[in-house]
Amino acid sequence: MKKLLIIPAVLVFGLISCHSGTGNETTTSADSTAMPDTSHSAMNMNAVEALPAIPAGAKVFFENLKDGQTVSSPVKVKMGASGISIDSAGAIKSNSGHFHILIDAEDSTASGVVVPKDSTHLHFGNAQKEATLTLTPGKHKLVLQFADGIHRSYGSKLAATVTVVVKK
Ligand SMILES: [Cu+2]
Image (cartoon, rainbow, N blue to C red; front, side, top):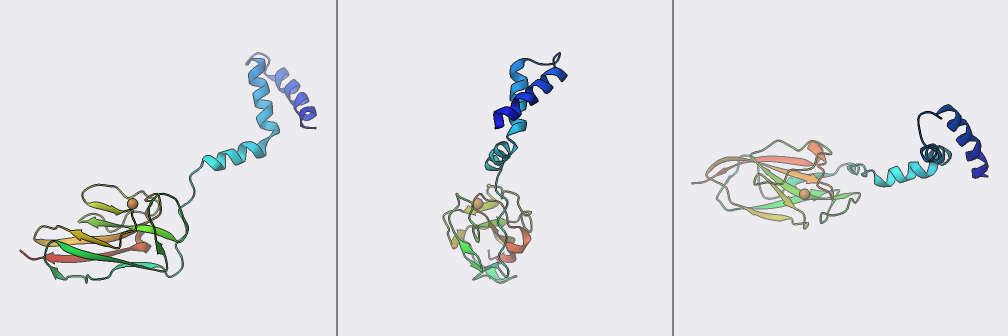
């Protein structure tokens, strides 16, 4: 049945565009017009999945650090999450992600943006819940940022900030 529909489409299209294209191009156009469902699902497969939704009530927090706390370097940091599970990086999974620590950087990485990977943006893609940071004496802002399996930030809703004072 589809071939019967395509043939008149090719004829009509060919008549309209007889000066502007070859016969092959005309056939290709008619095929994609005749099978919109196939081309549409192929596009969806190529598109990147949306950032998973944040479960209601989920949060992340520094388990062992309070804002303004004085610490000595190296600092052991315990990372906590509730209402969302901690998983290794790799695949996009709903209700899960992994930790990042931003050192003296932004307050949170914008939602959906891949967390940078550099000396001030640490990734814990093996589902680690603890980290040891070497910090210079003085004040430092630490941000705990949760992100999905491909490092896309969940934004400020799954971020926590503390400022610590490192002893000399
Ligand atoms: Cu990451």
